[in-house]
Image: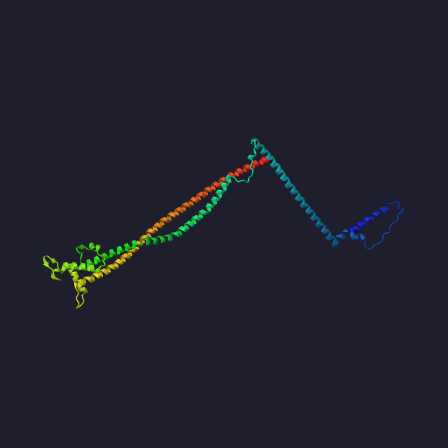
Length: 380
């Protein structure tokens, strides 16, 4: 359609020149208009444009492209404006900062010394000073001790708790082994004492005697073993013989089981024991009756002595266990006290190290800040 518009315009221009030129046509010839059923110009009328789908599509595409171009142009324009604004803001801040630094420099230079040596300027900022080394050492030491303290507390208490039963058992076993002879001697002494007491009680209850060989029973058995039945039998028989057979009572001679000596306790007791061990049609002598009774006493005394020895041995072992338990508990408590004291000491050292580290760190930062300000002023 655009081509047709251009062709019409190009055709109209020479036509108008030819019509308006007086030299080319001396006479005006009227053109006879041909009759047509459909005028060619009607093809390009606005009504036909609106109804043409191709024209509608072209117009829509043109409008879309135009709107997109305008939108892109607006975006680029906004972006350039923002960039210009940011640049202007940065330049303004630089100018303001420069003015402020100039004022500060003027203020500092009024109090600054004019003589400045090269030694005053640090050669290297990264060079570590003694304070920094001490700070780092305190930090590492505090970290190490802080890590070790709980470990020592945990492992120490566990180790002591594990060590205690084993140490107690070993100490008791060693003490029993070392004191085995003493325990045996104590048990033997207790058995002998119990046996003597049993025999003395038997003699007193069976034969109603309180002395043998001219000595009381306790003194007699201090030098005579309680389990020697033959010796005891002979001593009882001698006492019986002296009292009941060949002695005298009130100036009268005593005869065997006579009326005069039946009321004597030892005589009556020997008579009863002899009758007790006698059998029908088989009589026994007095010494045999005494021997049988003494043997029974000694047998019962040996049983009592054995039981007493066992009890004494158990008591001695229990006493050793109590003694060693108390000793181990005392050692255990001292070890626990030492562990707790060491942990507290380590924690105090860690706290001191941390405090020193914080102080040195604060001083180092303050000093480095002053150095950096000083160097910045000198560079400017």
